[in-house]
Image 1 (cartoon, rainbow, N blue to C red):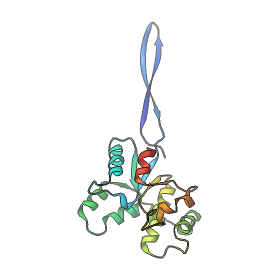
Image 2: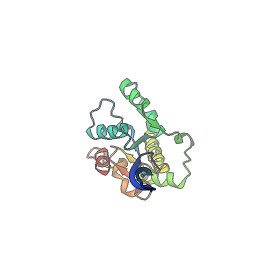
Image 3: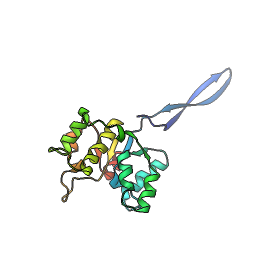
Image 4: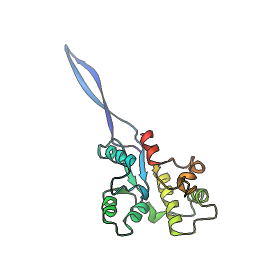
Length: 175
């Protein structure tokens, strides 16, 4: 993915006896970051997400979310969370995800070796799949803790050849 962030550099152009400075534009690669539902940050309490959001507002990075995360963030009737979700750019791929796609199968097997059995588990697979589909870096807090040792973060090593997965604090360091 290419972002529209540009860097300018000076070059000297000589026309006759006059020297002029000419600005030339070059495009820089900036990865797209997909945020998971658990990083909506509606109340602004997540320090790392506050930085990521500020960088996105300053157009230094591009932050999107999957259509699945967008729908999950609106569930439950939390007005602040719904408002925050509605301010996000989101993908529409989730309607066209093919579970027989080998990449989908690899993600499902990595996250849920017995198969995704619940809607929440299937949504996790779709969220990771969409990040992989768009070559985005998935930013999440799902898993890799004492109470949730697996999850997306806890299984990211199994998916390192499919998609890059970071926690929000790791994304800040990466950026």
